[in-house]
Length: 205
Image (cartoon, rainbow, N blue to C red; front, side, top):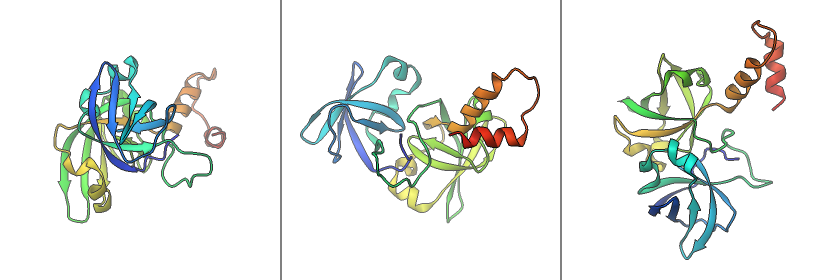
């Protein structure tokens, strides 16, 4: 589990045959889970100044290779007793989005991200979403896109400041929205759920 708070901007030194070599200040050990641009990966071994991670074929089939090149967002998995400060993030990429428009209005920058229409149901106004490992709040949702407002602190401390129109991003949608949809889709009764049913499902997590 992750929080979506970036702990470091690390550098990929190489990516070949599913093996990712990352230069980082983080002291990892074999078996650790680490999110790279929002993708949960497992450390296979370490070297002085970094570590190696294994990228499975399933992950490679979903995530664009550009997300395993150059500078990347890094977050180690939460440990027991850590302070929970962000959102609940699993490190599972649901889809790839694309920056469609950027609107700088001084005290923040609006990013409009286009996604496949079938993913819109899991993107909720004022809900959480993870973009390249960064946990953010959705402002507005449209037919095939959504709007985020990025504050100056986040811009300064992440790679979002380098994003342009056409930049591809890893997206993890709201975990609770996915779980609730999955459960309700398998209910026998062909009727809409009541608010009490929705509350009960939400409280079960």
